[in-house]
Amino acid sequence: MRHFHFGRNGHEHDHGWHAVRHGFFGGGPEGPRGRGRGGERRRMFEGGELRLVLLKLIEEQPRHGYDLIREIENRSGGAYAPSPGVVYPTMTLLLDMGLAEEEASEGPRKLLAITEAGRQHLAERAEEVKVAMARLEALAKVSERTDAAPVRRAMQNLKAALQDRLSQDGVSRETQLEVARILDEAASKIERI
Picture 1 (cartoon, rainbow, N blue to C red):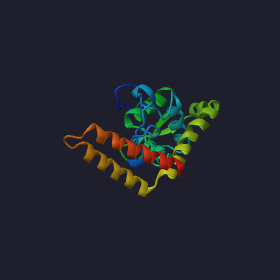
Picture 2 (picture 1 turned 45 degrees about the vertical axis):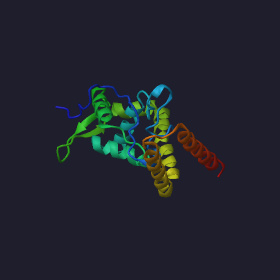
Picture 3 (picture 1 turned 90 degrees about the horizontal axis):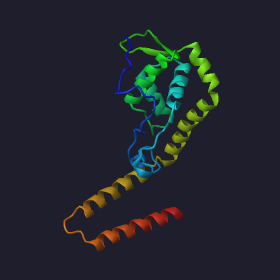
Picture 4 (picture 1 turned 90 degrees about the vertical axis):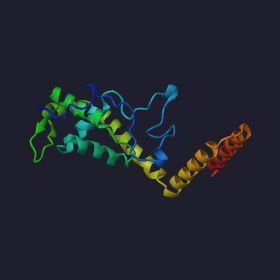
């Protein structure tokens, strides 16, 4: 009996980025939770890329679902972790495709191990694997560059000030425009640093 049937469908697509960090990656258009045009959530991996990433990780060593999620989180510098609702159906797909097999382990969790067919699958798609893994490394570099505690603190302070001021009764259009002017001026100054 398989233990990987989580989520409502068997799709392997990663339906949106699940940010595990707040602050810098909290919701800007370039962060993991950002939305593209039309409100569409951006995807970390397209098509079968998540399948290849999971397969690559279990090629390194047998892993269970939680390990896979944490390993992807670690390799992205803590900026991204796929949801269990995406990872577990993809694990089931790997089993169904014969690319992975369950391996007995101590404890209730079943380990997923790569099969010979899985190794061949990775070899045939080596370039796709390289691109997908590089995307995680690039995200880790962005996370490292933007992980500035003083900036996160200042952003939270700004958010609180905006919510406090703009939620007051009787905020005039002039006040809203002045707030927007101040924010635009700050953005312009930051760009010139």
